[in-house]
Image (cartoon, rainbow, N blue to C red; front, top):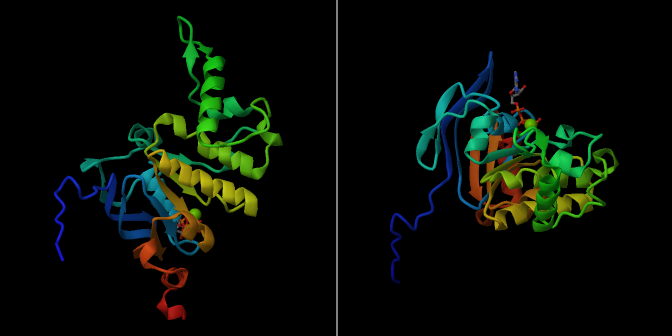
Length: 257
Ligand SMILES: Nc1ncnc2c1ncn2[C@@H]1O[C@H](COP(=O)(O)OP(=O)(O)OP(=O)(O)O)[C@@H](O)[C@H]1O
Ligand SMILES: [Mg+2]
């Protein structure tokens, strides 16, 4: 058999690398010496029991928390992600749950929350026309169907809100999109739509980090599954090389079986 050697350029390089990350909250060791990578156009599922450190890890990537120890590299360069703004500048977007939407405002307003485009000489008028155009384009690109743009968020269903929360990170050039339990509160059909949306984001060139407790959802969309237990990484498996059974065992630990 002929051996094919890949040159350096052909070996896929991770976009994001975390090395030896620990995070202590006082005496609580939320994360201990965790290595974590994200490759281009990859969907990584982050799994583990309650309190395993999943949210803490993604919050470090999103600039919400600072690591106690460890280093972060973005495209091979060491970086410090001191706040969410730093993360956004790198193209890292975290989807906050529907809680982060404003119920009394409509779809375009929520799409651009806090980042409204302005117009006019002094840049003081919100460019509503551009907001509507951009919202319509992104919703269409992602195949998100909402009743009407003018609908106030309070009248949207849970799944529609989640789709909006995910869709609105797209126009900001997100390269890595993080979702912390996006299907936790959703029914079967609505979850399916959110999973489709995750796959669509990947098609569009994004990488996605998704936290979920639902093994079916994970095996539906993930390319790779990373398992945390008690703040440590205990598994990092390509989906094609593992099974739900093995992942569950890694989550609970051998001592529980
Ligand atoms: N801001 C904080 N201050 C103090 N302790 C914290 C803080 N955030 C998280 N922790 C602790 O860190 C540990 C990991 O929490 P984390 O929220 O990352 O878990 P998780 O894997 O997301 O769990 P879940 O599945 O329940 O959401 C827990 O023991 C938690 O109590
Ligand atoms: Mg969590």
